[in-house]
Length: 215
Image (cartoon, rainbow, N blue to C red; front, side, top):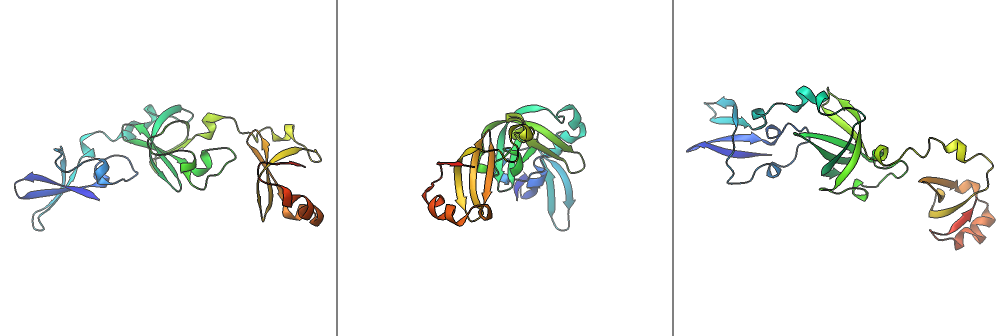
């Protein structure tokens, strides 16, 4: 949660991890410093009676959010390294102690990952688009899917109509029904209640994921 710094013989101050970087995404203190490092710091608080001193490193540089509008804008297409991956998404380095966040729903137009590591890992260099900036929350939302391709559902009505007879590739069979890959990142579902008992018995039992199915 922080690092103890000897400022004089027998006198130590604590730099909390939140005072090491302007980034709002807290990481381990070991990501910033290691034992034996010499660092510059600012005294934030000093309690002589309790003999406690708190220090800050980030205060030696300007808060990047003071002029965030000059550094990043909505719609910018950029490239950066993935700093950290969590089950909710990925944090991406935008430079100058600024990070952006990619939510699980913004990696791909149609594929929702069980875990973001299906798409990215720490250290990966990725391309993305800035989709939202919140000065109040000091958060920047990014999207990989907007950079990779257009939303395949934007012209779905031009490709398909009710009553069309199609052929697709079975990608999964579960209690909900048959999941069918229609190509162009479009996935359809044949609900279980739309499959006759005869078809379930004589046909679906012989289908494996990767096989084709007439719709």
